[in-house]
Amino acid sequence: MSRQTWLIKKKWKQTKRNKKRAIMEKIILRDRFFCCKMCGVVFQDFSTVTIDHIVPISKGGTNDLGNLQLACSDCNAAKGDKV
Ligand SMILES: [Zn+2]
Image (cartoon, rainbow, N blue to C red):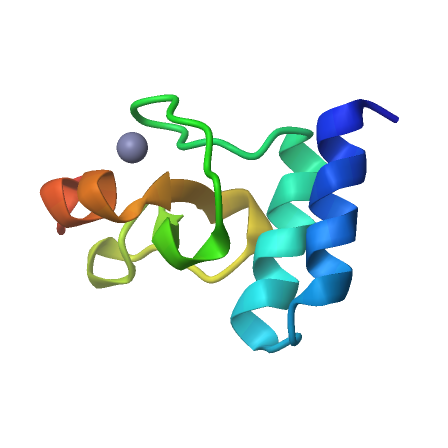
């Protein structure tokens, strides 16, 4: 386990869990890193993290884990409805 993964796990324990966080945790465990998939910025805290749909729901995307990635709020806002 990398130090970053360990730090994430520590942060998780300090954070009240909810559904969004649970999904994020799965994505982090899958991707093994905690940064924006689009611009590569490393997240410092959870408040700036958003869950991005690779294929937007409005374009027929699903809520499957395979269609989800982490993005910073800036990138997610810039991406909007585009694939
Ligand atoms: Zn970003």
